[in-house]
Image 1: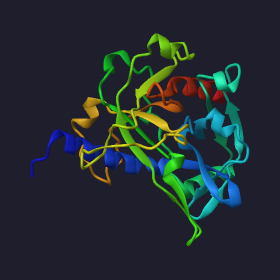
Image 2: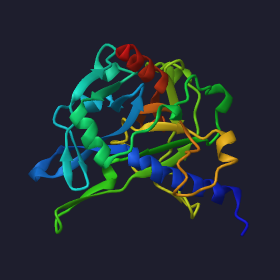
Image 3: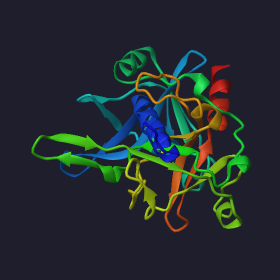
Length: 269
């Protein structure tokens, strides 16, 4: 059977998303009538034989958040490091990581798969890839999380999305973002291309995606990749963590993973 390039890339993306989801968590807060509401996204990764849960700092600032997984309410303990640059609303780094204690590592391993250090791509060149649809997000928008009253269960619908980067123009830099630290992505929610059908639909408000990892599809990996649910070699590299959405500018913004890893390595040392 002959398939088109777009169909092949769709298959790669969907398969990759399924595997990445094993390492992601959704944070919740208890809302009205005791109903959990989606609040943010995080991911588990092992670095230098240490186990971490990483998310946006404005997510971890809220001490009432928790994780729901496999019917259990999970709260992890350990050493929390949270970056803040001036006031939180002006913070354009906005990341935090929890170095899990031994008991938390045991619990996390029962429900999640830790990403490995070799998935990282540091010093990624945005300039060489402006306008290329080689960037991938997988997270949990609050608008796609619903509570089913009849069954007392929460239904989470993760959002998989490929996009391209945009230049940090002066209006964007005037918001405090800098090319050394931030990556700007195109997000026109009225023109989202769906996987499989290739239809243009309206995407979700991405609030709740904060803290999710930002991925890059290197051509050298996708050209030789065989989509298979048992293929554990992911055709993506982790390059950032998402922190903000600006509706009027139709952009989402992330922080380069380099800053996160540098601080983790300093703490470990």
